Every structure is written in C-alpha cells, then in structure tokens.
Amino acid sequence: MSKRRSKALGDTSDTQRPSQIRRMATQPATTAIELNAKETQLRDLLLDTAKYVDRSKTTAEPVVLRWAGGWVRDKLLGIESHDIDTAINVMTGEAFTSKICELCEQPETVEKHRITDTDIGNLHKIARNPDKSKHLETTTIKLFGYDVDFVNLRKETYTEDSRNPQMEFGTAEEDALRRDATVNALFYNLNTGKVEDFTTGLTDMQSKLIRTPLEPFQTFMDDPLRVLRLVRFASRLEFAIDPAAENVMGDSNVLDALRLKISRERVGVEIEKMLKGNHPRRALQYINDLGLYHTIFTDPSQPGIPKPDISRWKLAYSCYESLRVNKTPGSIHDVLVRSEEASYYAWVLAALAPWEYVEQPARTGGGKPPPPLGTLAARDGIKAPNKLCDVATAAHNNRAEIMSLKDAVLQKAAHIGERDRFGMAIRRWDSRGGHWRLQVLSALLVESMQALGAESDASDTNGDFLRSWQLFLDHLEELDVMEAPSLKRVIDGTQLAKTLGIRPGKWMAPALEVCVAWQLRNPEATDPAGAVEEVKSKRTELGIPAK
Image (cartoon, helix red, strand yellow):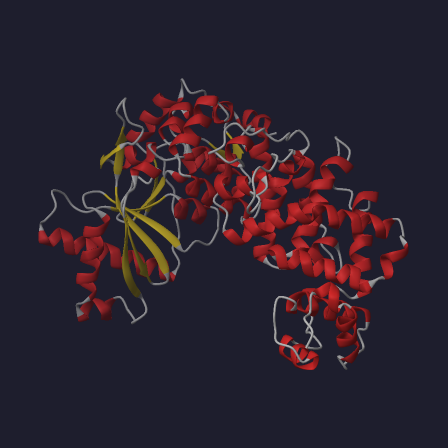
C-alpha cells in the first residue's frame, strides 16, 4: 500500500536526489512557524545567551541556534511537543548550557525573562557510547517546562574498518544530511525566525512521505537503527515509506547489521515507542511487510532455534486492533485490557503469538525449566521488562487450561457452574505471572491465527470466533469470579493455625487455598467454621501434623 501511495505522489529516484539536495543547499526551502508564549520566552532566553557568548569573543564566529528535527516536524503538523533539540554551530551543548546558567544568575536576566524558581532545571549530560550506536554527547536542561537538548551541529565520517562514525563539527546542511529522515532534518533558525530545509523535508511533509536524506542502503548500513525509526515515524504520522527505502530495509546485509551493531536495548526502545504510539497495528504491519520480524522478535543469542511461521501473524494483531477499535462496555477489550500498561503488554503478546506454534525444546536435566521461546524473544530480543516477561511465560504455561475452561463453557459441560473451579484457576493464573486477563487475551490471539480465515482482516466482531470468547468472559462475570485473585480470605493463616491448635508449617499455604475454594463455593458465608472443617477433612492430604 505504501509503495503505491509513494508512486502516486511522484517518487524521486536516487540518481536525481543528490543534485536536488545540492541545489536546495544553496537556497534552502523555508517557511514560517508561529511560536506560542512559552516557546517565545525560551527562544528569547537562548538568543540572549548567544549574544552573551558573542560579547565574550570566545568563539570564532557568532553563535547561531537552531531547533531541530522532531519539534519542527511536529510544530508544522500542529502536534504539541515538549522535547526540543537545539543545534549550535560553534559550541558544544555542554559549553552553551553552562553559559545559560551563568546568564540566569544575573538579576537583570531573571527580571527580563520573568524566570521563576521552577523555570530552570538541572543539567544532565548524556555521554556518547559508540559501541551501542549512541554517537552523540548531549546535554539536557529543563527550561520553561520544556526538555531542551543541546548539541553542536555535526557531520559523520566513517572508516572502512569501523561502523562507528567520527563526529565532527559540521554545517547545518551536513547535519541535515546525516539524519534518518527528511521530515526529521528540518531546522528552525532562532536567529532568523525561519524554517530551513536542506533536503526535501517540506515537500515530503506535504506528500506524507518518509524518505532518507541520502541513499537508503548506505544510510541504513551506517546506522541500522534507522530502519526501525523510519517504521516508527511512518506508523505514528500515518505517512508512507519511500519505495527506495522499503526495497532495502529488509536486505540481509542491513538486517545482519541491525543484529550485530545495535544493542537490543535500543531495539526495544524503538519497539516500545511504536507499540505505545497512536498506531501500533500499523507499525506491526510494516514490520511484517518489510520482513523485519525475525530480526526483532527473536533471541539473538540462539541463532539455531527454529523460526516461527508468521504467514498468519497478521490475523493476531489485526484481531487485537479490531477488539480495541470496537471496544464497548463489557466487550472483550473492555474486560481484558484495563490500563495503558496493559494495552502495551497486549500488543507485545500479539507480536509474540507466532512463537506459540513453535515446539518448545525438550527439557534436559533438573532445576527450573527454561523460559518459553516467546519469553526469550521478548526478554533478549527487545529487552522487555521482567514483569512483561513473567506475563508472557504465564500466558504460555496457562494457555492449555484457559482453552480447556473456555471449551467447557461452550460445550455446556456439567461442571461449568462450579464457581471454585473457575475462581481457583484464575487465582493460579494470576499468581504465576500477574495480569491473568492478558493471559486470556493472549490465548485468544494465538487461537485467532488458526480460527480466522486466511483472508480475514479480523474486523467481523460479530463472528463465531469472537462470540465464543465473549461467551466465556460473560460466564466468568456471571459466576462473579473476575476478582478472585484479590478475594479477601474469611480466615488468615494465624487464625487457622490457632483454631487447629498447631504451629504454622508447610501445610499452611495449601490449607489456605482449601479455605478459599470453600469460600468461593459459599460466597455469602462470614463464619470460617465451614472452611476449617473442610481443612480438617483433608488433614492427611494436606500433611497437617497431629496436635
């Protein structure tokens, strides 16, 4: 779809683009931006700081300041942004921010710019780390409610024996050309009050096109993380990706570089931003279409493990998107996904769904079993947090029981009215990984890859498949077991031991579960006597010692 759209917009071939960029560099395209009151206050302080530096005659030429990249793009799109990157022509970010602090110590500056105690925050220096493709040293300071990064204009030079670029002071044009996308290569010149476009950024903004400033293959080989950044921006902005870039984003050389050069933490950051963004389904569609799945959602330390079949993966993430879009009170999404964190977890589980059809390696030796392959893909592929990995593991381990209970409800088995059977199952799911509702959602998404037709886009929310899961959830609601994990016990361990007249021991935990099961069968009971009798009747089974 994106390729057709880009061609309709009028693609510019790579052989034409260098000369086009050179022409634009002489007279960069421009437009105006109207600043709000806070942005104006910030600009005025920064310009006064530049004049303060100029008066000191410590730089070879006057200081020119530019707001760069994302803020300019979002401002032109009418999107609110509180992160501002500031590029400086003749100073490092650390040196310039120290001058801001110096100037703001002067009473006349405080008065002129109406600076309050909370307007100027602390400096934070972020060191470069070339081994993890963090090539820039930046300095960040909170100013008038904005997180403002300062860094010098730079150019990148590469040597044949190293993928890590040498960073040098550069011109605005050189800085623009080294960026990941033309729409992120725009500058707002604080000195002139004009936008500067040294590439094709303004044109591509109008065309809703994500394009690399220079030749795509070399751009991605220089920094393979740009592949994921382009996917993120295309999905977030609902732009198309330039066909010339699409053609090489899945190139084996680019993917190998992405595996070897980029830290998995940085891969994870990009994926998290995609899935927490406003169009996560679109991001997963790009990952699918461009052939990026096996590079992202995998354990890179185990190249020999089988790859999941992703031919039907689209059904899983499209199914979740359909649930999300068609959310109504009491619907599947409304019941199972109840927070922003849960929504992010749900998208990750949708991404991991194909791993559930890969046979787990046979367990050898004793000790704790290894995590499921899907959990390894989350943990080592995108460095998912432990809590999310625990949910993925529990979803895998509990899927068979979830499916069994769901099938029992559909088949109207004789035991489906047993409140304790369902309530205790939910308590087990939740105790083993938390987020039991997401474990149920994961089972649904995994099943969708088989149950839905190959040509389905999972948009039919009234279909038999989703209706069966709605019926299962409605049954849990009717049994009133949704909050089983947080059920307040009618008797605690201390009271139980005292009633039995024995000391606490290993028997305590299973005995308390017997009490909870009794409580689920007797929801109106307030006297624990019946629960105690239930425990006594199972004394031998529970290993409760004699008095």
